[in-house]
Structures are given as C-alpha cells and as structure tokens.
Image 1 (cartoon, one colour):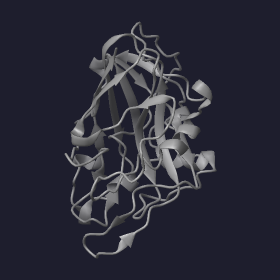
Image 2 (image 1 turned 135 degrees about the vertical axis):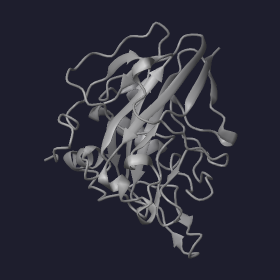
Image 3 (image 1 turned 60 degrees about the vertical axis):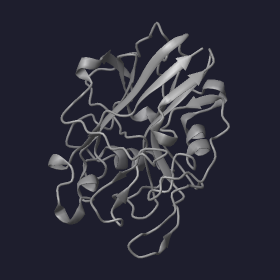
Image 4 (image 1 turned 90 degrees about the horizontal axis):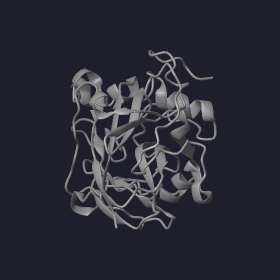
Length: 281
C-alpha cells in the first residue's frame, strides 16, 4: 500500500490537467545548469558522496481535486494518456530504451550510451546546453521529466521497481522523494502529470558510473531506474516551446543536504527549466 503523504490525494491522481502558464510556477524557482552536462544533473551539497541525479530538471505530480481530460492544443503537442502506446511503445518501453542515454556520468556529464533508436524525438539537454530541435512534420516527442536510480549513493529507500505501489510510494511519499508536481508547458499551455506517467524498470544498463573524486574509488552504475515522462503528439509546422517544471519536498531530498547545510531554502527543490525550442519544418 502507498503511504499517505502530507498532502491528501498526492499518490492517487493519475490524470493530466491543463491550464495557463501564469499558474504554473509555485514557490521559488531555480535553474541548475552546467555547461559540460549533456543532461541536467543535481548535486546536493559540496560532498561528491552526496549525489542525486535528476533528468533535465524535473519531478512529479500535482495535487488535484478533480480529474479532467487533457486540453487539445491547436498547434499539436498534446500530452497522451500515461497508458497510451504510440507506435507500439509504452512509457516503460521508452524508459528501457533511454535509461542508459539519460544517465550520464554525474561528475563529467559525459554520456556513455548513444542516442537511442526510437520513432520519437527525445527532448534532452544537448552538448553546450543546446535546447533547440528541428523535426519533420508528424514527429512525436518523448519528454523525460525527472529520474532517480539505484546508483550509489541512493536517495532514500529505493524500491522494488516491479512493485507498482512501492514505486509510487517512493516517488510521492514525503518520507521519500515527496514529489509535488511535474508539468510540461507546450506553447504556454500547462499540462500537469499524475502517477500514470511514472514508471520503474530494471534490471537495465545505466550510464552513470563514475570515479569518486574524493576517494578515487570507481562507483559502478546501478541497474534500476524510475522516471516521470510523457509522449507528445506531433506539433504543427512552425516554432514551438516545450518547458518542464517541478517541485520536490520529501525527507529523502532534505537528508541529502550536506552536513545539515540548507542548500535549497526550506529543503525544497523546484525548477522551471529547461525550455526547449522545437522547430517543425
């Protein structure tokens, strides 16, 4: 069973809600970038042993009291339902296909896996922080928001990825990551993702092995991966923006603060980056 979080309904909402950007930001928003990172990574504190990797900055779940259907955007880029299987791919299938690529070395930022061969354009932070993609009409997008894996040091108590309740508890419980929301903003329209968009997979080959710079010890990559992500329908011809936002307040996040130092005010991690530009020609 899922633990009840401090915010009722947190682990039970599995819908997509759309609204205007004015309401998207909540609390203090911060961006964490490194010019050498192929994907955005987060480190808590100054100790390399205290390390947590997140995808492109992200996180999961809005607390909602009603369930509404996704808004249909005239310019395309609609968020598909979590259980959808476009082109025969589920979110779990895509997690398996992209886990190695999405987990670069957390010290150097270098990717050890090539760009995956899938029928989707994956949005990610490219070399030199390039956030622009050019795609052909009819191209669907895969947008990973936030991930956690079992490469050491593990954040919180990493769950059995084959136990759905355990995965959701880890993601949403305030005793663990305590995810409050994950949002994808397409051309100013906010889509808030629920638990249908969170998947756990493993065993799988990950790419975030590293050498601890403090000890010189090689830390092998883990083999289990949890990610919040979504598929978007094709965008119309022209230039579009796709932004990701999120917030996390869980105890496992706060426990990663270096020696009790408050790295994030109030122990809250929140973000409103990256903002991708997608050009359909």
